[in-house]
Image (cartoon, rainbow, N blue to C red; front, side, top):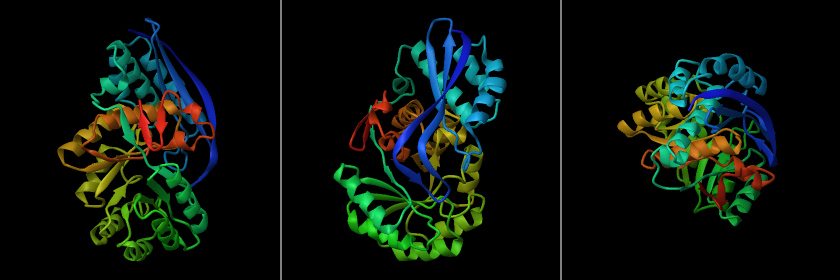
Length: 338
């Protein structure tokens, strides 16, 4: 199987409601879809969204990187050879799209699903559902609607500039006393603000707090991790294995959020997971707002590491205005299946 050409297309899927965090507001999922064609007529598919606030990439920069930097180096190679070449290139969302498409081809070449090729023994997992940052009242309403729909793992966006995060958290905890609540501050708190908020919610049913302060302030992250009874999850502080090792060495977090779009795809994510597995570091398999094929790749990988990945945040398709566009993924309440 030899790569003969690589084609790109841009897509947009409207959301049911605006997706709002401390970093951005988004009303549709936009992404680049890549097709890697081969001489055997097999086609590998990958995707990457532009998340400028986090990875610095745009639709234009992703497409340009794939067309002009990556594609010329992969034509004429087998998918396995291409994966080795890709390791030497920049690990970003563009690389992630190419990497997952190559893994798709490797799985096809072995007559397996991607899930089976990666070693997964299960075909389902439970994902969180995101509650966008809003007023405490509207977020409590979101929580109530999610619970009615059978969605009981709530990824709660906090970090509001109005000083009402404690009110938000208490309101949702009251509405959902038996739900799993994951807080995500998206770097928005100061160290002192984090101390104050965590102190006031220590006894609530909060499973973790994600990225409370700026990604590069590992000293503050370490202080917060030491004082908090609630586990701290590093997201933007740990894009890759090197950064993960630094976070762990400084005791700057209890857990790590792995995202294919941060680390550059399945290959580097597997290296991170192998290290986490060896050192008994609990992880979340997270995502940006993404298309269905990149979510499928992340889900397949998560299914292969059930002992290391404690939480799943692959809910983009649940936020689509039209859930049928989630194909080939299947959802029943918060259960995702391949």
